[in-house]
Image (cartoon, rainbow, N blue to C red):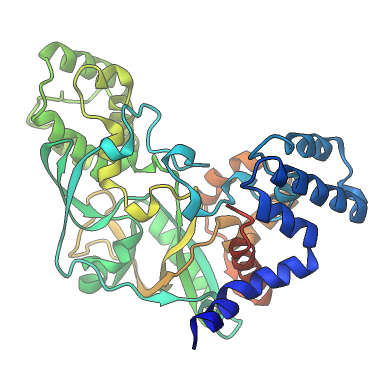
Length: 427
């Protein structure tokens, strides 16, 4: 196929379809990067919306339209299009356009960042053969027979397949286990494990796989990203911080202040210089480990010479997820096994999570999808129950996972998102 034919098929056609049916809106999108011109086009698009959809003539929308007169503020039409999916419109972003200067919803690596990301340094050494080769997958393949379903795997953004050996010039030795690529690591190769967690969560997920598998042809397990600071409870963060503390010039007085403050939260903390400190962090609960990481992230301790939390988080975060909005989904897709037993004694042990779920690595989407479009049934149920939008993310990661049917309606929604993304709606 010629380059022109490829462009016409894969890039131009979605734009043609949208522009033909929505000429004013297409003009608004095309001119958004141009101050004044884009704003005028946005106002025209809003005027068209109000003329053709009287129900949108509200004071709130009028206010958003006026705000749209300011350069780079999206029009009311763009906001309404995002809100119709049922979730927070801030999370409907094109990940490819998000940078450190405009990180977007849920993607900031630290509240106490001391320097730009390009001035932070770390070394990550990949382990040869540590990860299965990535396999691309399409929404059409997930749809399959029309009788498939998917469950979300909600996880942090830690990387896998190697070792972090330096952070901010300090020698460390932190095994990177993931994260979303856990199901591509030795865990999959050695134990056929697809996901790891602790407590009752693995059994809850497996029970849902079992139930869904009674009617579905296939049960897919699709990764969905937690917020950028969700790694606070992981061994990746605690190990990285402790390794740096050991080689940092921190006064005994400063260490004493940290120990006293941490003991107010965790009374059984042995002390940062104790030979039992690492053992404590390895074996304690996620809550106590998270309290350790979050406390040390305070500027008060950075000023005392403790490790820089933002640089540490950069080192342990998978680069593909650095600026991803919360809920970005499809970086990993596994296949669940109805009737499988939870592995409580895997040979490949994740230091943070002690139990694993059996399954198979299937692939990853070439273009990730926001959570509210990937799992619309969850948001449909939330809005029907009049649940607050602000609590959606927390609710999504708690409790029994919602089963999403991969039917024609789901496929149409994902493909429309792809078309809108190509048309520049979410830039």
